[in-house]
Image (cartoon, rainbow, N blue to C red; front, side, top):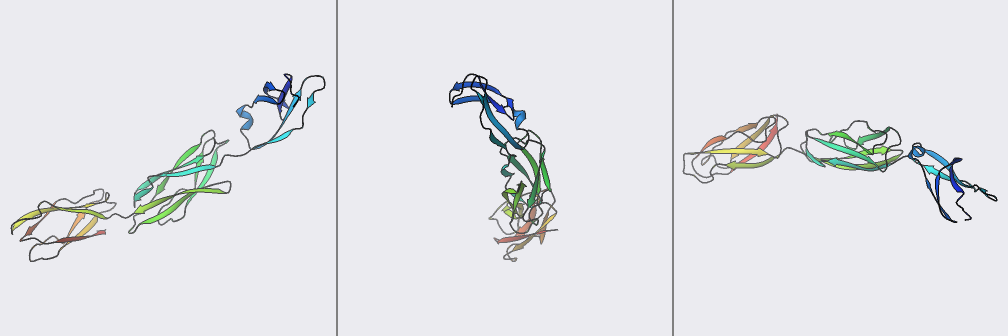
Length: 238
């Protein structure tokens, strides 16, 4: 109270640009350069008039930004594929900031040890690498700063067969039919798919077909079908 047009807000003893609003309210501009380091500033008011003077100073704490979020894109991948992680702060970095990152299950996903957010920025990206898996696996990707951790979960899926298609599903005996098998993703390695017929007296198929690395489906293969038979398959990676 008792503020006047001759009152000024002080920051560590320096007068700030101040606007008088009322006997109980002043507005002061704090230059961003005063907030670029962690610490405590002393804030007070000085009135330049008879009977004026300094008020008791109050502490103003400047804290380092914390981690707001960790995101992964995509959050679900086929083993052997990569995901991109993004760590975001809740305010621009006051200085170049190194954040520790880790994976809770390195059999499912691995990351580098740290990621750096440059001064003035709020985020940085990092790579998440996954291995080939035979069953679904998950891992939490964690970012840690000033003792606090934030994370996101990645799911790693195996390469599996998605479809088996025949050029014809009903034919006369002795007719040649083409078949194609497809994976749920491109093959990370040459992948052998075994083929069987439920009744070899009515339909025969090759023992196996190979889906080459980088491909998602086999080249067409033919079998001589004497009548209808069911075809089954399994997948093996070389």
